[in-house]
Length: 370
Image 1 (cartoon, helix red, strand yellow):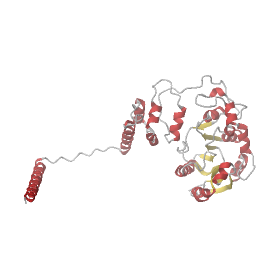
Image 2: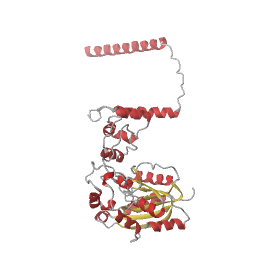
Image 3: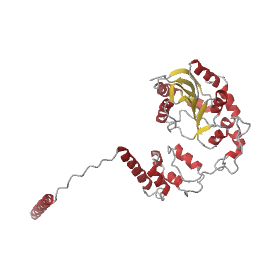
Image 4: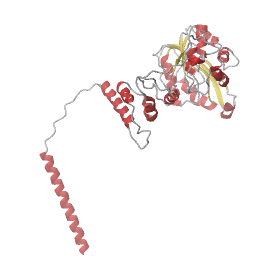
């Protein structure tokens, strides 16, 4: 009986307290003056976007966690750059690497951090932020460069070899002949040994028979630029070569041959205007190891830069046979290009035999008008 009376007494106290709090809240509501509506301020959309970019960048850069890599001081020039120019969104996924890259003394010599730059670029952090420092140059640059893009030897003095296991082009020729044996690469682009081969002169005949002139082009993943060299010396065609310095000085080799390398990854938008290229060639770098969304965006960026009637040339693209039929051919077919050449053959090296891979060599022509 006593317990029941005590429980009822507690309920009575709770109800009384609730009513008192409600009355207090209502009194504050009636006493407080009603705030005046805010005066709308018109801010241009482009300014809002820029302010949001700056805010997001600084939030990413100054985020602190228990990871000591993330709590290191943010370089002043990194914050300064974020206020004057956008930073690629993928850079925010690698704040420690980005801080290392921007941690330098302004107006002095830049750190020679080529390996760090390549790591950031391959992870989508591109273009890299600009730095206010002086890039290193080779200690004893050559006084003259070869005019022939197929010289007997490339000048070692045109490269800073610090970051590479090889310290000369002779070493690269011995250890990486596929890319650095210039004469062998030249022969492979001029010969016809199977349906997968398309000699350069044969391609130019195809274009001529279609009354299409080849003057400008891009070679995606073109290594040291051998395809660009052939197009230059035989047909006076200007080719840009996209390449990265992964384990070897590909860009320096192309420059030493008088060619123009573009230091951009495959996921980067091609840095040329719409409808300006006559030819885009995709070499060995474009293959099944590229994520499908990256490849699809790349194909449509190729379509963007090609002018009407221009050519997309896939040279020995490889994938699993089933994937070529079910994935890549439908993806390419969506472009609506004319198939000028479409040749498929088994990839007979150990990896190809193990994985059931095939090669595809294709020449596709963009419609003259959409």
